[in-house]
Length: 110
Image 1 (cartoon, rainbow, N blue to C red):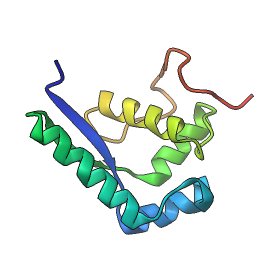
Image 2: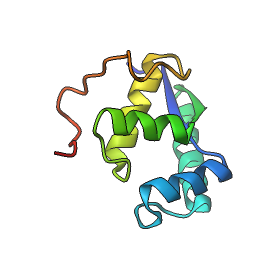
Image 3: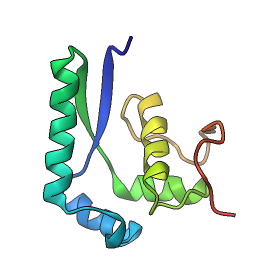
């Protein structure tokens, strides 16, 4: 049973930064993002699951994706970063000295 979840959250400035590094064509608008994310949070909470926003540092995420050879334009890569961030309690962590294994679920650049 799921007791709690963390959902990626971007500030308006971070969303613009994400568009720059991931490619604006890979993303919905910020308004669509906030509406979808708020609906997801409400859905979890309605089921009795504690759900909270975790603000994403796009610079850290971009560096992490690059270090681990994930294409930042792919939502699955950003999800993998979210998983790594969750392991560290939502706090930024040392990219260079923190191994990460996604079990081969996320496609990496070759």
